[in-house]
Amino acid sequence: MSDPKPTRGSYHHGDLRRALVDAALEILAEQGADSFTLRELARRVGVNHRAAYRHFADKTAVFAAVAEQGYLELVARMEAARAAAAPDLEAEVFASCEAYVAFALDRSAHFRVMLGPRLNEDGRFPELERAVQAAWGSLVALMDRAQRERGLRGERDDAVITLWAATHGLATLTLGRRLRVKRSALPAFTRRALAPVIAGLFKPA
Amino acid sequence: MSDPKPTRGSYHHGDLRRALVDAALEILAEQGADSFTLRELARRVGVNHRAAYRHFADKTAVFAAVAEQGYLELVARMEAARAAAAPDLEAEVFASCEAYVAFALDRSAHFRVMLGPRLNEDGRFPELERAVQAAWGSLVALMDRAQRERGLRGERDDAVITLWAATHGLATLTLGRRLRVKRSALPAFTRRALAPVIAGLFKPA
DNA sequence: ACCTGAACACCGTTCAAGT
DNA sequence: ACCTGAACACCGTTCAAGT
Image (cartoon, rainbow over all chains, first blue to last red):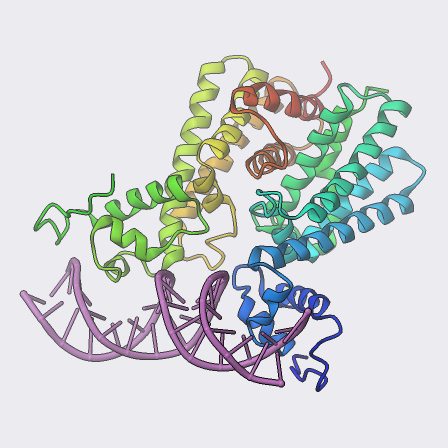
């Protein structure tokens, strides 16, 4: 698992940055975000704790890289779920939101890094911003199509906000065990919780 | 502001516990939750950093006390908003949810302590649990009345989950500046975002 | 260029006393 | 009972080298 042998001589490293991000994801999966430590990250990769600073300005920068990758995966999962449910629009919306909640539970520490205290407050990480925008864009596309095909009660952008808020709230409350759901019951649970939201967003048939 | 004079001789303290909780709220309001430190808390109250351990087992216990008080205030604000909007049911629901979101923004660090990583995972803080239940109960009462007076599309408990998720998601996304809203625009924003949810929960008129 | 090691100014928490 | 002070095992980050 954590054999720290650095493939002797391989530092100058090939790709220390990528190794650090991968190891960070391992640590998050094993231990959660609160106890995440730059020093342990370096230990796991088998370098001095200062070495990370060659690639990341600080701990926040490591989290930003981790978060960016998380958004890419999140979008991929939402799009895949959506494709599998196509071409029924309503089914696609459900599937997309289900994928969001499932990601939050399956990758809880990763999700918390992504959607906990905002990392890019000072705009240092434009690539993170782009990844976030891609996720947002995925929902926009969905509500755009909803507007054209079914009609929305309100504006498209308001619909995106409502849908995201409901899905995100469900995800974080479930993640934090404020709502208790067995993993196997999650898809049905998500569906039941979001059904009124989707019904409220679409124009009555 | 932070004159640490301990009212000479008043330690043996009168109420060190209360002084610590009050100071913790000050620190949270000024600096946020991430940089919150037991040692600074003690400094601010003017006692040795070990003194807090007489009243709190650890840092989590301090947060639990802070969170408990937060839930009491949150319920109070929701109930007050609701009372002011009575007797129109729909107006009460909006007012209650608006109060939740407003609390999250006005007391953001406090809110994050309350609804961030769960403090009572191991059941050490039954009083916190009771305060959380009171908040939950406030929404249940509302949806209960909705069920009786207007009819809900689904089960009452599912309606509570949906309403809470949407409101909570809106609160956390706004709080983390994933959604950008001026404080003055918040009531209207909340209303617009939650309107489809409430429309979807109630039986069509 | 890339990595290291010592050092700094912090933490939370434990132990052993003091009044 | 209640509070203190030294100590322990950590942090993130800076500075000054080493290869």
